[in-house]
Image (cartoon, rainbow, N blue to C red; front, side, top):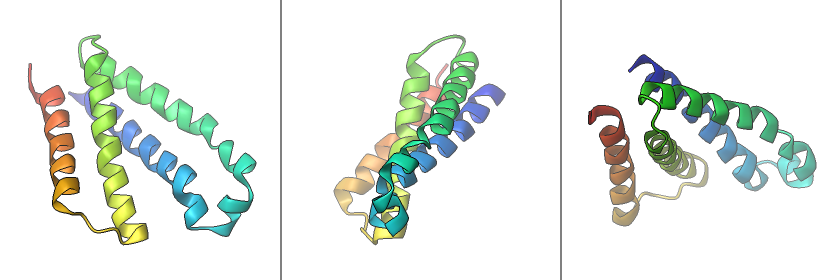
Length: 113
């Protein structure tokens, strides 16, 4: 369980950083004017994803699928929260159900043995 939690933390950091890398162009002029510089964030982001995968696979007894689903679920949750905060896009019923399904996916992968 410890490795899965560490992996989830890495996924949280990677997904959050990726969100800012992609959506930052709509928030900050620097990001909009300097996409090549911003693309260099891909190096540390890739490292975070590699570490996230390493720990979640180790925590899942070597299985790859749980890592993929956990990363996907965390990505959807991070995206939903940041879009709401930075773009004031409310969470409609369809989005809310999708977020809840993401949480369920994570719980299934982490808790179901």
